[in-house]
Image (cartoon, rainbow, N blue to C red; front, side):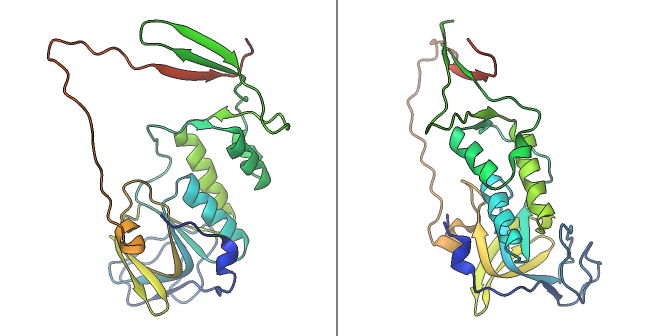
Length: 244
């Protein structure tokens, strides 16, 4: 994936315009004017929309990148193949460093309705249980939280849209290529052009090979268990907001 600082693109101008014929109106985007903050874009197959920055993937990394860029005044398209809210199978835990970053970005309200995790409990496969208090790190007393990804990701995405990013949820990126003036990504709704494309679309990134030049390779390593062997339940870890 690509790692970058917003300062690296400080010279990028601000433009977001629709080009090419369109048989279906673009919701929130008049065909002769700039994209409005928080707009939801639905494009015809022949339409093309240009942004300063297109962020592909509206998870925590992508939404944070879109948020910071939009706050700097750039026109940002935030793309995700899924409609929100949507759940994820892992990642509900927010460590103290993540919480500290949220507060630095003035997004502490994302944690509203949740209490910090003060106790960590580990459950073993044979019924053993262990509990220990969780302490703040770096002397500031900041603790972690547990928020469902379905809620956390949607709150963070909404913060990016409120900052001015354009909602492109439901747009699945199929391919991408470089141009003289930046890069384009193709979706089932049309083409998005930008001076900069941020690939934040996760482990199964469509952009990995086209942007970074490295195709995704997944290697599964394991061993076969005897057919008469019963597998033990996997250990589980939970966090609670109550003190021990």
